[in-house]
Image (tube, rainbow, N blue to C red; front, side, top):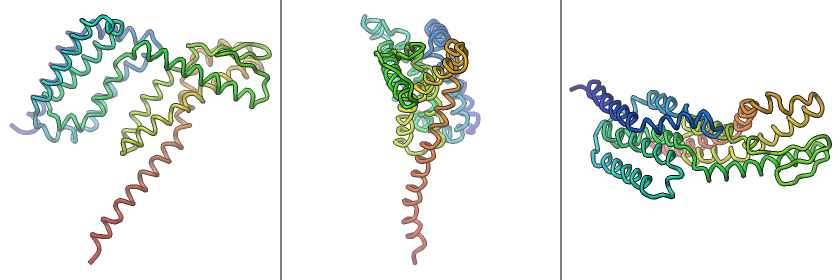
Length: 300
């Protein structure tokens, strides 16, 4: 049997595993779709599977070049997945995040099926797009609350500092900015959680293509944290300045309600210098490591 027909056969097996598991988990999948459409911090979820499939397709020649199967590894992952499901349904404190646990179990099931069908070598080469599927898992409520609180605190501090820098009289009381004509509260809805998660997903994909070093990819993601807070502070100040100096309608207008896309793009632009520096450092490191080998190869 040639390589192409063998790959087609294993693709069929994997598609069957995905189809059967999706039917078995249809209720949590339906709940996940509803969750993504009704929660700001879940709006990225519908993009995760298409992006993962696209990444695997682009790397298909490399990923499926070695199809040595490791049944033991796949079965171990299946067993761990079953243990997770039993624990989720048996241990009452875990039931508060049942949707997260069920979607996590589904993703682990898909990964185990991938290993069973294509082997551990293929998994290692496809680890990024496969682990990227973990972004399907809704964040637990306590994690979301802490993230939103941190974004509120950081955004209000940045907005306060910018307003002082612009010589605008302002006092700060928690998340409320006391200004001459209006008071602005940095509410949970103003935390920028949706654009922050969208930016994080974008950086993960971009880093995979642009950078080679894992720690540089991590640095790129970490560099986004202060930029997320700064761009949200700029958004708050921009809305205030437009409201007081141009048109009061800006306070409740489109920029306030759906300006996240504009400031998401602003965050991307702000990260371009970071990407350039990381890329340049990586290229210089590569040249440094290659030069001694080249010198040895050309020496008599």
